[in-house]
Amino acid sequence: MRNYFILALLTLNCIVSSYSQQTNTDSLKTKNTVTEKQFDVTVMPFISYNRNLKFMIGAIPMAIYKLDRKDTISPKSLSGMSVVYSTNNSYFISFFNKWYYKEDTWRGKFFVMTGDKNSQFYMTDNELPGFYDYGTEVTIVSIGMQRKIINNLYGGVTYTHANYNTDYQDDVQPENVTQTNAIELNSLYDTRNNVYYPSTGAKALLRYLSYPTWFGNDVKANKILSEYNTYFRLKNGKDVIAARFSGQFGLGSIAFQQQVTIGNKDIRGYSEGKYRGDGKMALQGEYRYNFGKKMGLVGFAGVATLYGSDTKDFDWKAYPGVGIGYRYRAFEAVKFNIGLDAAVGKGDWGIYFRIGESF
Image (tube, rainbow, N blue to C red; front, side, top):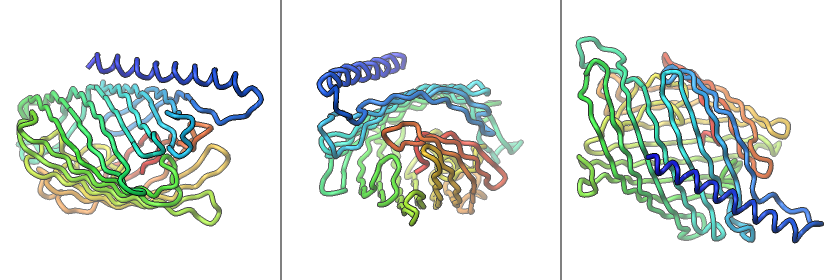
């Protein structure tokens, strides 16, 4: 994993150097011309807290740029790194990229992450039902590409490799090493007016993930992931109402590390990791209020349900969540927000640091 991390750092350095040189050259050619900033870099602090990972602190350097300055149609691409440490002795280092090029005909992504996550899960089929701790050393590498088929419709493929080494408290489950290799086929229908802060349009994404045994997986499994987001600009021209449906459906033998939990993006307000299963569905809405040049507030509410839980009483119950958040514009040239959300759920709560909008 260290090799991946070094490669990520070198890639980011090459991009920065290349665009810095290009910007300097272009500025000499156009001394008296005001042009849009082609490469924008920012470093943002990461501060968050939840009941599972406890207090988290870190830093997120990010760069937003044009792969081709002559391309006036493609959105700006994004590259960044996240380094986070928590007071329960977890840590995460990730490198993320989103690329847009050839007049938005092609879209690419690359993500690599390594870390040590100390977490908990809920068990009832034990002499002492309750929360049990576990630790997972995790490495994930994912690369994907999408191609425009017709206006607003994209099709693509993604490969994701993951390796988990998990140890459980009191040996309630045997220590295991799980390696997965996923082949993903996806389709995207995207009419958003802005990929980073949409105020009109919709995004519909359907993903089929396969974990075949012939591709190095211990057991065969499949997942279907779907989401539909829609956006409405209010009459004042600044504020936005956003709505989202998401469904994650596990098929076959879903490993513990592949299961989903209620929380994070769908639905905020759950951070203990108690409600875990093979699949979940969630519906939520969000009001985005903007004030000043760089700031905003959000209010949101939603409800989720799940199935395939080891605790059968958790299946198909309603899990509501409601909360508020703060947003700050990270870049001058592009409306790309970071922020902090606080939410409450059924007997639980959470605080979430956001890179970009929640959806």
